Image (tube, rainbow, N blue to C red; front, side, top):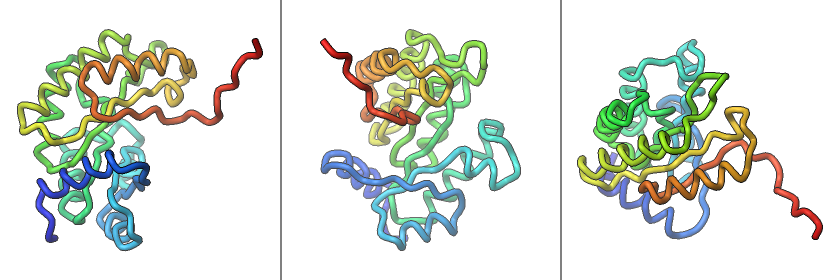
Amino acid sequence: MTRSIAEKHAAFRALHTSGCFVLPNPWDVGSARYLENLGFKALTTTSSGFAWSVGSANNSVARASILAHLKTIVEATDLPVNADFENGFGVTPDEVAESVKLAVGTGVAGLSIEDSTGDANTPLFPVEVAVERLTAVRRAIDQTGGDTLLVGRVENFMAGVPDLDDAIARLKAYVAAGADCLYAPGIRRARRSKPS
């Protein structure tokens, strides 16, 4: 590999200022190198793809295994790698911040933190709690050098709470909490305006 971690981080930030780009999901070294050879400019890990590749369910792989996987993917390619870091491997802001410091140490150029809980009865963290967690993540990134891009991820449409107004409110709150970029996966159709 010829690009340094700093160069990968700079390239990832530059991609975010130059328009749209596609982030494909490798799940192992082979798929990462294949996607790089196809000409993609950056990659993002897939928690579900990696979990399935090791015979586990999504969101059930231990933090240590995820961290090792992130490091392996970062080292396998010259492309910047964004981490699907699930819900941050912690409940409290301090727990999530500690996990994020470890993730940043793998060399990832960006990472996303989900606002889902994994509990079907309360699938999303209350927005105030999610903001506290994201604020702690921002602080953790800044304390480790500050050039890892923070993606505020809204899970409404993945967690069975398809409320667009709530998703938009969360996205706005995550920007205020320090997110560099926003992601709201799972929206399947455009919102139709109500006739006046």
